[in-house]
Length: 385
Ligand code: NM2
Ligand code: OGA
Ligand code: ZN
Image: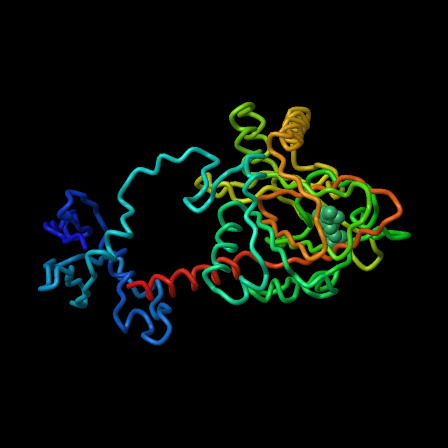
């Protein structure tokens, strides 16, 4: 633990400067400190949920007294009201916000690593039974999805519905008009081009849905055709290449909304309006949407910028097609791959021949996966302490 050495009430009690033994220092506002109190009147001891609202924070809140307790925690008294609150030094230090965030558009968090075809030699791969039996093994698989947006699973029973068991390891299936899961094989009168033997250019699934399914899983039941190889591409890596090579094009794809739609069967008319590259208000790379088969007419790009937008899209597509970014594999029965559908694009080469190719796919969501991973990590950390 890093103890607090100095406390200075500043700005007439509207804020506090805290200095730690290692020399680091940060300011915290009275309103922020009061809002983040962990006492039983502010947060439910049963579930940690907040009991107060912003309307319970007086507009003239200030810190009247600041001191250190015997164990080095920070103790504050607020006015009006005179409420006393204690914070541990570690809790506070982990939540410093008094810093300049040198963030250029396109940043990603510490758990995300961009990749290209060097991942081919070290595709994250875990066996289903091991993942089911051992939370630590499951955690390595889930962490790979968090890090690379892509992972393989082997040893899954090559029978219809097995994806239920795979998704059951970490979360919930997202049911859609395609079903809880769907068969991917060449059909007569296909309702979707995925249900043919055509090649599918690298894409994210269902960009015509809002919210988009954030995970997709594809499992192989049969594969004895010629061709049909699977390819994955890190869409975040592609977006950053676009930014490096053609910054104006990156801006085009983040600034204007594209449109996507699907009405391949008479009971469905899905449509969404979202950018091809989505950033958060502070520039974090959040999502890539790219799917030539469901791109709808662009009507949100002004006339003056339409040609530049198409140029940007073409440059993005060229980067996505660059073999240097591709990881490829031929799925065998019992193999599953999972992609973060907000980030990693998947493609299929065309196939032919006398054999059969039968995949099953399903959607799920990343919030549940990340929650499951956080729970395992938290439990393992507690056990180690
Ligand atoms: N299927 C496989 O997003 C798409 O339309 C890709 C989706 C039909 C569920 C195919
Ligand atoms: C899909 C898809 C790839 C394949 O079903 O969404 O992209 O290999 N399929 O058939
Ligand atoms: Zn797909």
